[in-house]
Length: 285
Image 1 (cartoon, rainbow, N blue to C red):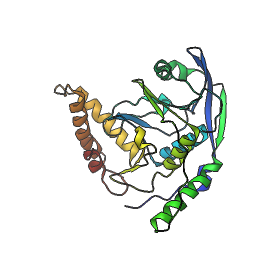
Image 2: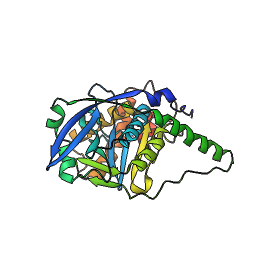
Image 3: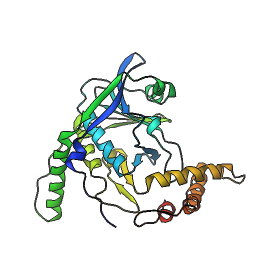
Image 4: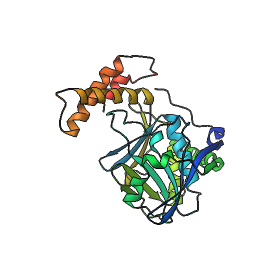
């Protein structure tokens, strides 16, 4: 399978414009940053066996890496990056709705489950933003290039010293049901950002897994055919739920949806890009 080229330095350093909202909850002030409504990027979020799994297309996965990099340089307490409901799509394999995801800097930011759930409320996202901020991730391109150079040297058998990340407290992953929060230190966020930026360097079964923090259960995947798989899974779930013999248990329902998504995807067979086929990608879940 062809391997996607690495993102260019220009792609990693262009300005990202975000909406900014000043928000208070439970007596604490927050500065909430989110993609603007017109941004076409979509993310699918799933809690799977204690893993917070975030999926998008290749461009979306790499964009998340840039956002995490810049978040690590936000020194104001209460600075949050939110993957808000406007930019969430159903799970591309089972059609389940995605929880909102909140990223914040530890230890400066304090979040409770109630605060995380409040960030999903539609009323917040209907308010007019207080302004826009421009994030320019110039230094990420250099950090990523250094990382790839070390990886290439190691693959060639050349001894190479890997930079040591000082001991960091474990990230906090807060599951609030309809929303999830991740709090991590700035060096850890930057380490994750470099890993996520490398999405596309390796593919398996239609996904490029970056695993920025596997030990803490945080995964980011780029998915081939992402938009079409989301569409097929969403339609398949609606049709399965409308059937009189639909399974009562969630696991059985997910299994039937994933199988039916193959049929739905086959109604419009193309164009798809290179192997594996969409049917095989869905059936393999």
